[in-house]
Length: 250
Image (tube, rainbow, N blue to C red):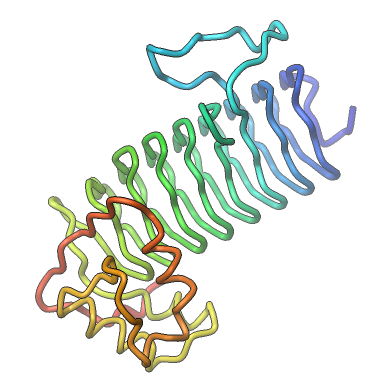
């Protein structure tokens, strides 16, 4: 066993570890599970327990009784202390490459977390949610099951996310409201300030790009991201606040 894997960790049958993976003491990793190269699993992290669904068998994976659809931790991802990630039911529960899942965070069954995202301490993400690339979810926020958080969005601390969050939107409050756009996140993703201003104007006007209409010319650089957002069925976007702000936070 690698000296980066604590002898006090439990790694069960059906777990595949890539190169240069670190696993801290007290971590429990149950199969089926794939942990890709350079991932870091903190002390006490719990990965791979069966889905919390009364209709499904609660198998004892630690005895080699494997079931369900698995977990995948992407290359370079960081799973901090006491985080909990459950097995998928029909698809792998997934943490994307280079994403961070911080202490005490919870990802339920079938969650898809994109690349370069941050799920902060104490966040709970319900089953079947899709969290896009570069998303940042603030401490102790709660994401209701089956919700979509679009790429580059920011969710404020303690926010109950009961509706879907459009790409690069900034959402916080109770009830949650779209309060601006993540301009710095757009810039870091390679988009110009004019794209951020245009997106802000469309969100302020209530245009959340749910309908399958032509993408405005000024937002065509975001075409792939908007198309991905639209591809989700039954999207119900969070309502905008008035006035919106042009955020420089990230």
